Image (cartoon, rainbow, N blue to C red):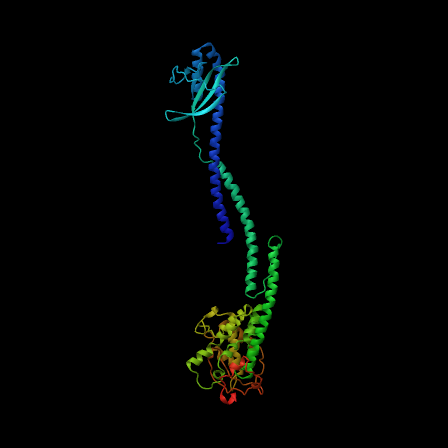
Length: 468
């Protein structure tokens, strides 16, 4: 689940709870407003009732005053108490107080208060009764406080929730745009870390991420230039090591170059990308790099190899790939070299990969390398047709059948370069159908080595007659 989706879900849930909270607070606020409105209406009614009662209280007309108070009680559902000048009860619609003296409380003007009667909370409005400008009594209007029944405002909830969802949609769209821009920069950083050149991304590069993009470009340029120099140096050193082994006849001379030309025949037919084609070409030329860490005596041995020696020989692709894999820019090349001895049926080395699980470059390399060994090595090298016949026997077992058919089709219409050199043949996977006597090394090569060179280790196990 992407960060944008998680953010949208979190904001939606938060919006729901915010809307609920606002709706409940709104309902409570509406309830308080309703209570205030009822209190104002009660106070206003008490004032009007006091004005109507004042002439009857002044004349002592209790009958009409009683009828008016009773009508007021029935109209608003309240209890009406009227006090005379002395503060004694002149009228009580509930007939509770009788003629008791309660005392006037409205000398300072009308007001409201809450009282408790029989365990009930009542709102009491106290209003002075005036006649001719003089206070002649007091009217008390008592009513129960209505508790608001609505505890949740659904209309307010829907309005707030809809507004919040609108903001969530807008925030999600903006977050998605930011996420895409950050993701593109993250992908570019990952490509820089792997030694690749990031692709150019179209779009608006202004805003907060513009400076980050500029820094990334500078970083990419510096890292790429540095890695390119290191890779170039590494490839140059590896090429010198391979050429040194060729001069010592530890590996067939020109095998890597010819393998690269053979691999190019298949690469052209399947239309490999230029970058992949360059990696394949380099993998073909450095396929025997790992043999620099194999004892030279083992590479020149003419007798049958022991199981330990076979295992050591079979491990040369892994050793070469481990050294190439140290640089991000050579990791694809290292992967092709590492799996060059895998078999299509899954019985190869080092990981017993099967079919299309084997890297495409490794499958092409295996076919091109084997064909060169069949046609250039041995006392009696085979011509291309005979070599294809021999390789046909391993189609589907060792070699990828689709790639082999493409290679065979390309080779039959391609004239191979004549090859007269005779070298030790090292078949991929260590399978050596026949052996040749190695040629003598080139004159003067042994004197070019110094005691501190990388190739000195390679000469430690030379036969005594060569070491002298």
